[in-house]
Image (cartoon, helix red, strand yellow):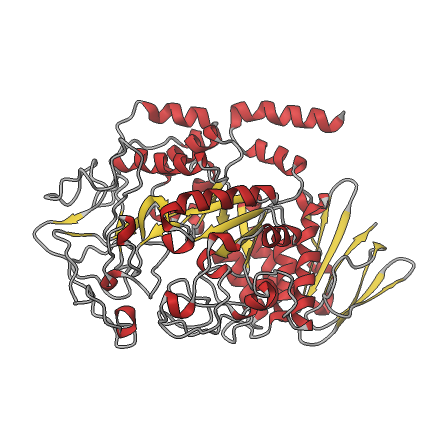
Length: 600
């Protein structure tokens, strides 16, 4: 009865305050706190092991939608995953020739790598033809993947890249009556509220000066590789460069989308009053419905609705901080009214913006990189004391449930890379802390759970990160795939133990203390080991879990005034020793060891 009354009270509060209280209800009623498994879609199912630098699709292979078999998806779900993020699904610029399917050729002079950047979207209403067995049926094949994912109990997330699109954006798949981005722009002016792009009148686009090591297509011949790209007048580049000839380090393959931000930085739309931080989605939609809005706002809303209608359960927004928060309030409020359970994740790196993008922008989750991830990485590398992490975490304590924690994603170095820590097992204590410190979601990048080091020289960009620009196989992940059997039979013993560790850790997301429990820092009780060990409690009224993680290369011994009720819940987290006395417990944590125990 008490739980029902709490839920009723929280739901009533939603009508006045918006989404924050509804999140509390979701956390208490959900099966688990969210665990997101990110897959780079064209790499996941690729069994080809050639890995020739700058290799073509024929040489190096490419994964398909069909590679996500029910077996593969059930294995992912069995790790404790709730959401699967399919990265690189939307149709982006690429060098492959699909003209027989009515798709225009892309110019490799403005393509990064052989396969192309997944963040240079060419057609928002279609999917990457590389991923389909029959490119003519690529949408149907993706719809089938959505259905398989749902059948496995996984919610589906895809990217939306609002800040920029490919230099030659051209939607051939848009629904009847839809006006594509830029189709009606007045290209004679730098800026107009009703233009979708920014222009440099009187100047034609010039290619950047390419470094010797990064020529288009790695130097291979191609009929369109001629050092030219026809764009007149030139458009602003995706990262905001206003030069007709951007630098190679600019996002030269993309153009910036105009959301009503004038060249001087002022806004050509109404300011959303601060009071809307606590108002609900319907209130936000009503605020915008009688306002004259930039052309791009409704177009991006219609794109999001298109994919929701296909069965997608949410979006990860690329570089969301480069798009004004008012647009996000407009888009996300519309999305949440259409699908209240949609999951909205934003890439925001400026801590000053966090609270506005959550409360005014109605985001569910933001990357916790600049504070939490960066600090945890320095601790793993021995550059900082373990005692520095929780104070950093406390800087976002008021919004902690809205922060997404991760140790790997497509932008970051692999844990097992020598440039990170060079040992997959050294990621264990950090994963324990990252996953268990709060109610925030956890993100895992495919291959992380088997120690993928990202060592391949794929062509564009350097190793340490698995390439997102080229066709490549992912060697350690391929061992888990075992030629499509997805049984891990080719993994080493150590890799199998690492994956088992991840399973035992991630499935703790179902426990009430982790799902919605409070955090208590116990660093002041760790004494001499506090520079090497992170310790905290997660607790509800009926469950308390003690979490301890050793970041040192040597064992750490210490006592705490807690009596253990249930021994270590983690498998393969080190040969730790726990000795219970009358009033306290002595712990000896193995090097990079961790324990999670239930205590009185």
